[in-house]
Every structure is written in structure tokens, then in C-alpha cells.
Image 1 (cartoon, one colour):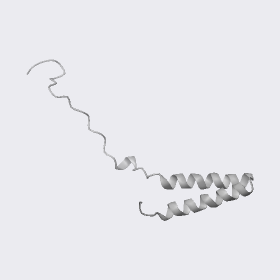
Image 2 (tube, rainbow, N blue to C red):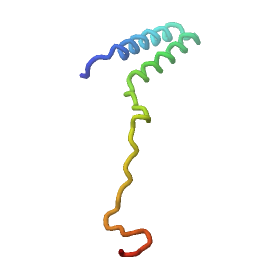
Image 3 (cartoon, rainbow, N blue to C red):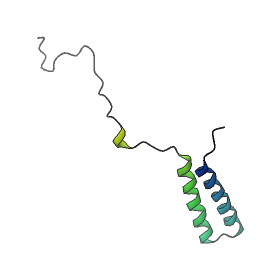
Image 4 (cartoon, one colour):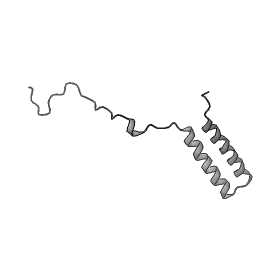
Length: 74
């Protein structure tokens, strides 16, 4: 099993508590809390994406054996 992450552990605990509260009394506040806890848990579990600023553009593939564009054989 992977190493524990404090953010994920806190999000799971919050989600479990919100789920129990929504089961006990199905109020709109309980469901809203459950929805917010679910979103937090989902964002905590997803790996973070790298920013586009740090990425290099992909190199264009080069075809081998291709001659000049004008068709001459200089």
C-alpha cells in the first residue's frame, strides 16, 4: 500500500462523517456537506497535473527520405 497522505486522510474522514450525517437526517444542508466533502476527496485523490508553462512543445516527427518541398534533387 502507498504511503499515507494527510490531505487524503482528512478528506476521507470528513466524507465519512458527512455521509453518516446525511444518512441520519436527509436535510439539504447534510447533502450539501456530503457533496462538498466528496469533491474535496476527489480532488485530493487525483494526481496533480503539471502546469503548461513548464512543458516543452512536442517535437514534430521527421519523415526519413523526404526530399525538398519543390521536388528538385540539388
